[in-house]
Amino acid sequence: VTDELKTNKISPASGTAFTLGDSGDTFTVPSGVTFANSGTATGFGGTNTPSFFARNTSHQDITHGVDTKVIVDSEFFDTDGCFNNTGSTATLNGISVPSYSFAPNVAGKYFFSFTGSFSDDSATSSNLAYFVMRISVNDVWKTRNVFNLNNNQGRQGTGTLTLLIDLDGVDDYVNFQAEVGTTDSSTARIMGDYVRVNGFKLI
Image (cartoon, rainbow, N blue to C red; front, side):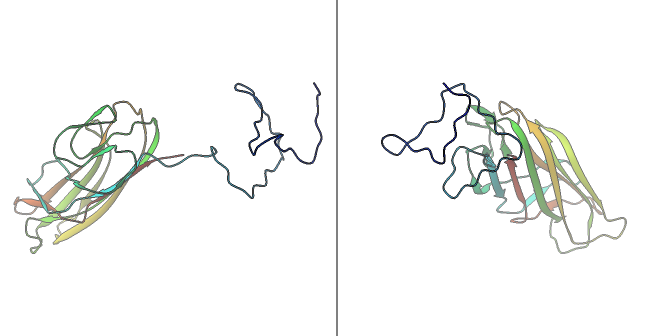
């Protein structure tokens, strides 16, 4: 037993593996110490997962002025299988996940982004009056953007919305809504292949 060991190099007595301490031990690195790594370090830091990136594949015609869940049916990637891109509730990682929703199986702070384009049902007339975008947790909206064209109606509008929030990794789920208003109260439209939604856990 010694209070201080001074040496220029530590190598394994046999093989190529060297173990530092035992389970439960704590090694304190004083302020000002620098680790200079030229090899491969594993088990440090973290990854931004679970994460997903998804889109819609066709137009979604919706009722004028009614908040509606956005159909997001195609995944670019879904690292842990936490996003339900189907039109019915599914069990993912032991969690009941509603349609077009993300339910992470790891607790933490998560960042989400929602981009979409909106119009009337034809996208050929200047009937778009306003649109509202929402990101919801457990079907309660947590953030929203309101785009009011203020009597200067157009054919199509595009917006982006973000959210940073804690999720419990047990039963919290996140989905995306839109409300679109037209000047003649006709059917509104979430434009096909314009919706992009993504989310990931912060390290």
